[in-house]
Image 1 (cartoon, one colour):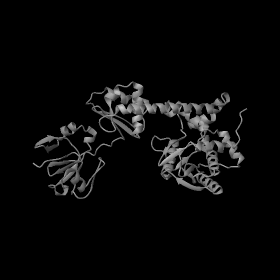
Image 2 (cartoon, rainbow, N blue to C red):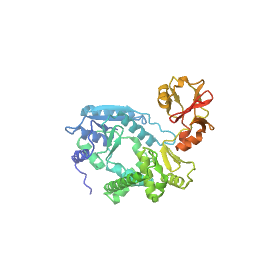
Image 3 (cartoon, rainbow, N blue to C red):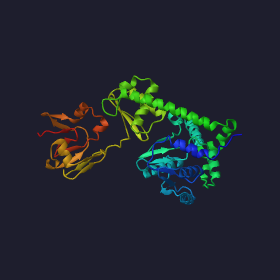
Image 4 (cartoon, rainbow, N blue to C red):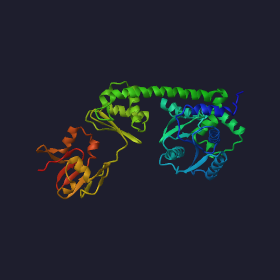
Amino acid sequence: MNRVPASGEVPERLCQALGRLPPARRRLAALSGGLDSVVLLHALAGLECAPPLIAVHVHHGLSPRAEAWAAACEALCRRLGVTFHCLRVDAAPGRGESPEAAARHARYGALAAFMQPGDGLLTAHHRRDQAETLLLQLLRGSGPAGLAAMPLWQPLGPGWHGRPLLEVDRPQLEAYARAHGLDWVEDESNQDPALDRNRLRHEILPLLRARWPAVDATLARAAALQAEAQDLLAERAREDLETLRGEDPGTLSVAALARLRRPRQRNALRGWLEEKGLPLPGRARLESLLQQALGAAPDAAVRVAWPGAEVRRYRDALHAMAPLAAPPPGLCLPWDGRTPLAVPGTGVTLTRDGVMRCHGLDPAALPAPVTVGLRRGGERLRLGGRTRVLKKLLQARGIPPWERERIPLIHAGDRLAVVWGLWTAERP
């Protein structure tokens, strides 16, 4: 028969885990009102010489009992003498988004927005949560990054997010709650068998525990080993990226990337995208990116996109960015040269001082009418005593096509006077 550890082990494990977390200016305890978070808050409140403790409840508004849950959390905080905050969010799922994912994104978005620099957010994820997460990621075909499951802590907003109960099992939390006479609320969605995590929790894992009683600890250990493997892969990616940097900042050299074996190519690309804060593609999309980027002719227009990111190739360089919106067609804005002018689709706001500083001319003194637009094709610019084709000038400068389409052009009368940030036309 398995021994259920005494409730005193929860504070001991909690203190050990807190010692491995970064220092915190304030500790924010995420309080749902369920057993796990109630035990975490109660144990934190019992610690001595701790940073200020604040309980934060996220009100999703998804359950008819949501108001009662918030009231129960507030009442518990009054009894414990802990400051309480309730954050109300809109957790309605977007198109193609699951309700669970929408609620999670809304919850952590609200918590990150509430945090101040140096805050540590603490959640009550425990060993069984870790086991469930590992199995879910395995069933989704995840690699080491996904199979590493949940780390002890990670950056979040202006602070960090810690999980100090990851080495504590659910029966220990239950024993602690009974020993201290704690009350908690039950979320009916935790019993919904349509949710993958609930199916694992209530049907699959009990069968595994019946055959292998230590399965939760075993899966947690497997997740830790995957985390070590992921650390090594990340270290290798950082090393490879130092030899893959392109001539332009933030780019990768296609020729250098082609010299690596395929697994290292994939690993380096993942590290590069993470470095830029962009979402990672699935394996099939990543393979498509490699095939197109490495196999295309040098002058081919390569673009591979997925939700939240896209990678483009120009000459020997790969560029990664958030998806670019199409530039507005036929843009032609009148400008008096004095009032700041935001140029749609470019992220540029033209000002009189900016043009004078960058191009040495007063836009308010240019021959009327002064208009601002984007390339349409066929533009010419007078430089070095002769008229040049703008497209060839941009190609010679090595400016990628998608950037050429988003450079503001200032026309004075019927002539091109300024290519923003690059050239000032000579007077005829």
